Image 1: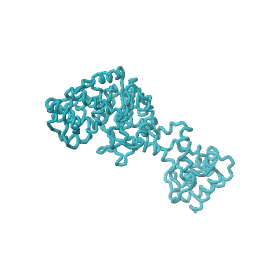
Image 2: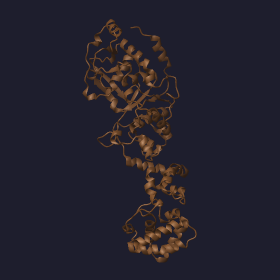
Image 3: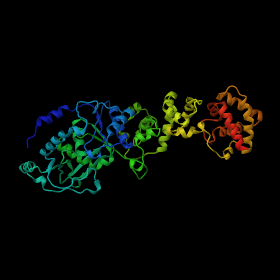
Image 4: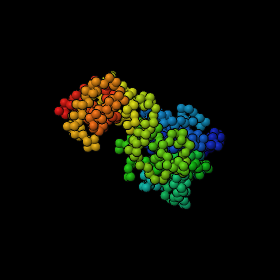
Length: 497
């Protein structure tokens, strides 16, 4: 078999050298799950921290799993998260194309090259190809006489149109040592490794083979992937050795777990990135939280929890990546998101909240900007808003037991007395602002010689029908307006009577 060695020399000459080059290589199979987003983020951070190049590559060789519109999801998510790529299908670059299905001829040529170098062989066995992601603990080793075929016999079978695959040739003796930045050196007996399919009978490469070819030809220096691929890692080394290529730095990340026993899974209802954004989480908060799922800053930043994307890029170090699985704690994310919400510019928060506010409150007399200002420091995620403010549209049915508050020392009886005292004072009030309302009611409490809470708690329940509200009694009255507030106080008195 004659090979065009000039082709391979030209491909080598295209490879960029001299700086860190990383790649995020998702399969377009639908949503962006949290583990995938973390891989994209870590890969981007490694490149940005080193002043290197970040590449987006689409791995679509598994045609059966492709989902229409999934590539758009990838682009949109990366853009929303600020994970800009320097090279990729949409922006081009020196080692294009960046879509695997467009590199089909390349894989065939390199499969032939590997065969010629003794690292692979043509296999004509008529059997079902092993699944690419088979359980590595239950390896069914392939064994056949195809490696013994002469070049003439191979040519004869090909000429006869017999279907074939290209298999990796594994040494029968000795060991292979693989080095990972997080897990260190991993050595396996070669006798434990299966001779995996590299090129399928349809001419498309398997995941492992395409990755090695593309990573080398794109000059990738650091590869970030999930620790589930550690079992396949020694076979990557043998492929690199078979071609005579330098092995990149591998960074395998432990999985993101739902709990101590279970990995996160969309099938089990765990949220994807899109789900989280739909539920009202902020992209910056999600990125900050995901960065800390399996990585921790070192040195003087060791105790820091809040990072902007530029701060993460400056602080990120591979040595901070943990070998232990990370548990996705939705309550911790809610807390972090709440902190981000508080720090938002009020106008930015209002722009985000406005569609939700308009849907929840149809009363044109209510100032939605005032509602936004009230709720911003008191909600964890945007989707909390409707439940927190629904009473502004209409007081819900409530039990008069709400008026009984141990700390405020209120009872149904003294609450009714308080509201009876409050009503005429507020009815006579001309300046209807939070400040004026508060000053007036404090003066009333002083006059009645009672604690402020004996006035404010019954009033808050009266105007909201709730035990918990995003604001105190006077703030709620200021937003509701004089007429609506007095109407609600009147109904509350009737209810208590």
